[in-house]
Length: 505
Image (cartoon, rainbow, N blue to C red):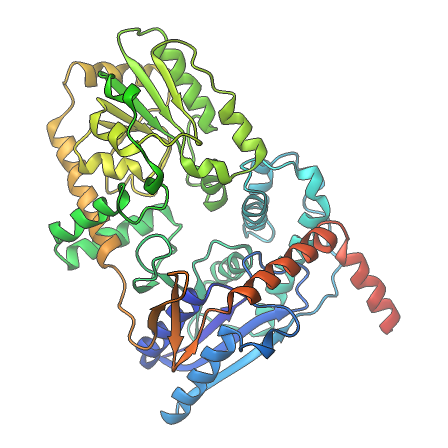
């Protein structure tokens, strides 16, 4: 039996609730449970903070402490070793500059330190912060340096614990945020067992919790998990149908609630649709989510170039509504797209055109990995990918890598010579996906979910709310903004630390 080591920075209450459920359900597999809350003296603190200002204790304890207190009582009653510690990291570093010759986010993503993906971790933080798929690195030079130091801080602390694969296992939340990625990279470098806890399903519905054996951001392994789940639980067609219905207007999808019918659409036929993805989200996840087109707009412009030569066909480009929440730079790129001819129609991110009506009437679908490709498969629509995606191993869409392949695929769709067996395989894959989203994970047993006055989910543990009060979250976000933009981005914290160390001596 191994020792379970759980490392927490700061995260949403529902991920912490998932952690509690997983520990209570799985602790018999472990000799001891050790809980580390790393929140003090970090050069750069997490972006997603919920309760982190002086005075917040006057209103309620942080979710981390509520859960730690509960687990301490739980394990004492069962005579099992449990410990909880709030970790304060060292700040004494002198390191070479790994990033002085890096010019763009693509180069940054590839930088390694001691065979770990430090560049990918830092680029993910920057992309999440800026909501920009290609942020200007010159503006964030000091922040990048401080992120490097934070990464090394975490590594140094983990190394001090002398963890051994045969004796220890690490649990971490999701694995995508910067601080959590540092732990994941440490575990991988040292071949230490690793599991990922988070909410199950899709979105923030907090319906279930899940403990992944493999990273949910490992494109292939995660899809293998979906296949395994499907083999263990025969897909319920009624539940799968419900998942697809939830995505459409009238369902749970926050974007589709604003969709409306469009008379221009009603007059169209014989059209293909390109559904865009959020560039920043794809860039932040993994180098494996790549494309032969390098950038999404390269693929879009190739589609436009082809369709303008085919006046008997129509291309509709539907930019994802979430694009309006991205950086000014990313939004500007999509706004520059113009209707080059009558047969190329662009519905930008600020349009309320009904994407699902577009989908249902389309002759063929192109995506850059958007989940609407799964829904196209469910409707048995001919669909093609222009990039790797998180569902391409269970839903085998054709991957078009150049202009010739685009032309050939469109011709085959037009002539209705696509392989029916392939279309059916895609449909069966969509059932796996919908089944996983509706049934994977476990129901809450220790956490009670209630609605607050804003109809938002809140988890309660032994009568105590895990979600901080709204005004506590608001104040925390304000202080987070001040700290980030006045200190972490603009001041070289490593030099300040050196000066402080000098005074101490």
